[in-house]
Amino acid sequence: MLLQSTWFFLWGLLWAIFFMTDGFDFGVGTLYPFIGKSEHDKRVMINSIGPLWDGNEVWLITAGGVTFAAFPQVYGTMFSSLYTPLMLILFALIFRGVAFEFRGKIESKAWKKLWDTFIFLGSFLPAFLFGVAFANIFQGIPFDGDGIYHGNTLKLLNPYGLLGGILFVLLFLQHGANWLNIKTRGELQQRTIAVSKKIWLILLPVAVIFLIASYFATDLYANYFKYPFLFLIILVTIIALFAIRFFIAEQSFFKAWFASALTIVGATFFGIAGLFPALYPSSMDKSFSLTAFNASSSPLTLKIMLGVVLVFIPFVIGYQAWAYNFFKDPVTQEDLDMDEAY
Image 1 (cartoon, helix red, strand yellow):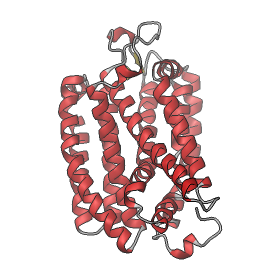
Image 2 (cartoon, one colour):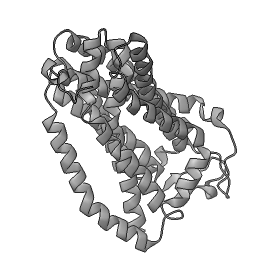
Image 3 (cartoon, one colour):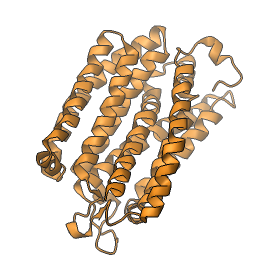
Image 4 (tube, one colour):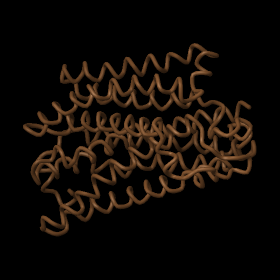
């Protein structure tokens, strides 16, 4: 049971890291058509995430790979019941990556507008759909004992699912705006600062509503009342959320970005801690739910995977820490003039 519990935690951690890292470039891409007033502004915004966005998506592959290898039954049932939103996310990510590379290839307004649209949709749709998917997982998916999904895509767009989608979009918008506060200067930076303050004013009540709605729409709080120390997750997340606004006012933009990163991790673990031991709960009957204990791979597989993770993940984290530090400075005209620039 300890091995399965460890992998449940690692499964949640990998999703949290993905949302924390790729979240800010989803936010930048969603803000892109609204803050980028000129071609120069748009290029600055793209190049602010240019060296990092593809590395951030490694965590999505890792999270998906861990789901497949450690909990194969969960992987199969999840991809059959959430097939449409997951495929939409996949195609959105593909077109976003292509858009980054293609928009600067031809000097044509129509050409650039086309790829700018894909940058926006390829950022907004994954943010929204991941929120919808995880909110539905929190409240339970209607599948039976054979893993057959009893519903359709529209059924996922229920009030709680939509609220989760809105929350994820706002979290990523805040994270992205905080990143732009770090990476921009001048008039563009002033716009991003103003926008980051406005986003926070919307994010705060939505986050509170989501916490309250989770009490009525899900069973997440059962673990919290059983193990009261888990309320520390909610407390730390709330503190981090208020710290975002404080650090923006102080113009401590790195600290604001770290605070929004912690808010995203806390919001993810709010759900993960409430789900345990279920990874994929069934709303039809709790006995149909897939848990860390009834849907895991063999102990030998989990042991081998744990060894691989303990050896290689520190290298990945170390590389990303180096990359973030190396590209921490604001984007300048000199950066835009480089051949490697977008």
